[in-house]
Image 1 (cartoon, rainbow, N blue to C red):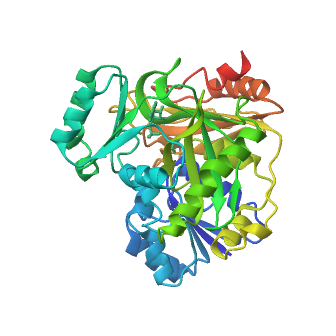
Image 2 (image 1 turned 45 degrees about the vertical axis):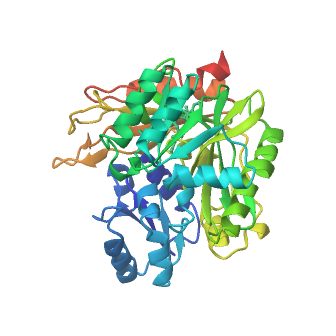
Image 3 (image 1 turned 60 degrees about the vertical axis):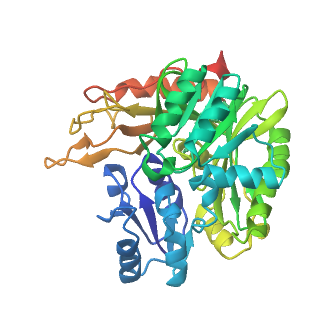
Length: 421
Ligand code: AMP
Ligand code: GLY
């Protein structure tokens, strides 16, 4: 089979790496990919938002399966378009992907079907949102309705800050049309965890849990980023909790979407807060998480291509999906200045000096004219280390990461520390 992976991050490198392990795969294509995918697949110079270009390339090459990494093309209807053309695609349709692309939709769905989520209200009127915020006791959470590259959510401890966040979203339109509506939410406390599942719209099979780190600096300080590290499993989130969340959150969400006429097929990601009152949904995503995928996929023992085909052909109930008991810790190495402005083009050294079983998933990298690997983005790579437990994986991660170097390189030194200490 020929498989095309859409996207250019470390998540997509991990997807291509895992899919390539299938004996049925003849060739992988990644659009547009990076320097890491270039050495194990064919990169196609097509952006993920160029749906017609991707469809034409898939037809010309004879792609048997297209796997969509990021949310933007899903929200733009890439799965619908491929299905219309009779080309197999892994990822939800545009209407099903609304569970990620509209926080107002996701909240309404959760409220209608009794899925545990924080208290809150959606607004399309700026004045009404402002009055509501004034009536609330901080802290509160203000969320832009639409996709905002992970930047549309502000957790604030004063009414003043909440009003500023609201005005940026709805008046200044910092995230464009994503800010035509907002959700104002109760601020929950507890431990965050991501539980992802495969689903064909009927059967829901949870993956192993993972935790990600959104803030730039150690101790969860500094600005929000696309994710600075991850680990799996999560010590505090055992098999019983996984089962409970599958029953009370993931399965009801899949059922609810089907009942609303938007059958969901693909990976459903629940971002959860495990509160004293049980797990509640902070967000749904319509795809694998980044950097969660980089620590979840290495633990998958079952052929990922088989799972994806079972999802497409509605036979996930026939699959026996197995995971290894290993632990993985992933450390994201980013360019200096990220998530603000940063320079690119710096050579990356030390990639050949790592322990044999270290996994390095590339994100913002490219081959320079001198064919050296150089930085080409904010998040440059995820270095993922295996261990028989998190302590071992964490120790191995931080033994190897300092061997990789590029000018301005920054990374967190506390990934999985709370699980170990
Ligand atoms: P989201 O994009 O909705 O996952 O939000 C980004 C981050 O904001 C989450 O990972 C949480 O750390 C935080 N967050 C979102 N909603 C809430 C909430 N209701 N209470 C507390 N923290 C939240
Ligand atoms: N790690 C969070 C996300 O992928 O949205």
